[in-house]
Length: 462
Image (cartoon, rainbow, N blue to C red; front, top):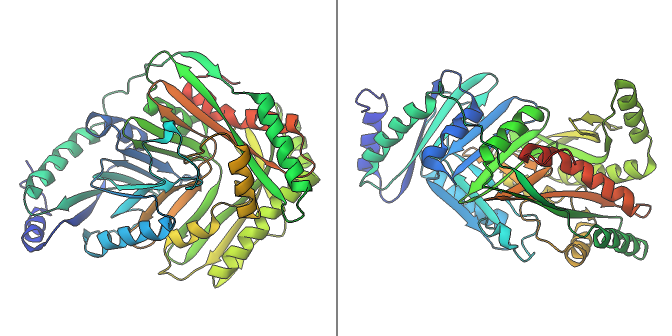
C-alpha cells in the first residue's frame, strides 16, 4: 500500500493527538497532468462531488474530487456564516505544505446564489443558497507547475485506512494513458420560453426606471431549456468549454445529480496576499466575421452612449466599494475592449491593496451584485427583478469560486452558464436595462450570450 509514503508517520502521530474531527492536509508536487482529464477520471469514485476552476489568464487551474467537509448556509448573514464555519475548520487543521504556492493546501470551492430571498426553483434543489465543499483530492496547476493536495478529515478511528484508500485512488487517477469517452446526447427539444412576455418585462423595467429618478439600471435575465434524448455528461461539456473559451473563466461544480458550469469573462474578485483584482464588465456587442468588421464593432461599442453609461455605473460602484476597503485603488480612466469567442465587452480592470488578513469573502459580500448583474441602486433593482423575473436564478450571475486557509482566493461572476440536471440543461443570459433600452435589441443580446453554452452542450449555434 503506502508503506513508503513520507507523511505516513506524521499522519499516525496526528491521529493519536487529535480530539474530535480534525482536518489533515498535505501537498505534493507532481508531474504535469491534464486537469480536465483529472476531473473526468474522478467520476469513477466521486460523481456528484467534483469541481473545476480555471482563471481567464490561464495562470491557474483547480480541479477537486470528493468532499470531506461541506459548508451550507441559508442564513441572511450567509457570507459571515460560511466564513465562520471555514475558519473553525482551518484553525484546527494540520497542514503540511512545503511549497506555499497559491491555491494549494486546504481549499473550499463553491458559491452563493444570486438572491437568497428568491424562492428556490425545483431545478436548483440540490444547491443550498451558500454551498461549499473541501475536496478529498485537489489538483492545482499554477504558473506551469502541478501540485496535489490531499485532505483527510480524521476522527481517530478509520483515518489510516482512509489515508491508504486515497493514495490508491490517486495512483489510478494519475494514470492518464486511457482515453475519455465521447458519447454525445442528442438534442430533442429547445424551449425558449415566452419571448413576448420577456420583452414585456423589459418594457416594464424601462417604465420603472423612467418613473423613479433614483433607479438607473435593472438587469433582467431569461432562461432556455434544452432537452436531450439521454443524460447529458457534464465532463464533455466542460472539455468543450475549456477548448472553445480559452479567454474565459471555466468553472464546474457538482451537487449530487446536478452540475452547474460555464465560461465567464468576468472576475468578481481575486485576493492574493494583499493584492486585490476585480473587473468592471458591462456593455457588449458581437464579434465580427472579419478583422475589419470586428474592429468596427469594437469602435462602435467604445463610442456608444447607452453602453458607456451602463459601464460607468459599474465602475463607479466598484471604485466606491474598493476605496472603502483598500489602502489604495487603481482605476483606469477609460475602458478597453475584452474579446472572447462570441462577444466583445467594455472592460475596466481595477486593482487594490488590502490588509493581508482580510478574508476574500469580505470583498465578495461587498461587491455582489455589481450593477452589471443586478442594477443600480442594488436593492431597488433587486425588488424589480423579483417582481418581473419569473424564475430562480440560482447560482447564475452569482459568485462562484474558491477560498483557501490563508484568506486568499478568487471568485468569478457565473454568467454564460447553465445547470445540467440529468437530460435537461437550463441556460441563462441577461441584459442591462436603462431608459433608452429596446426590448428587441435586448432579446438579441441575450440570444448572443446564450450561444457559448448552447454550443457546448450540443445544441447548435442558435
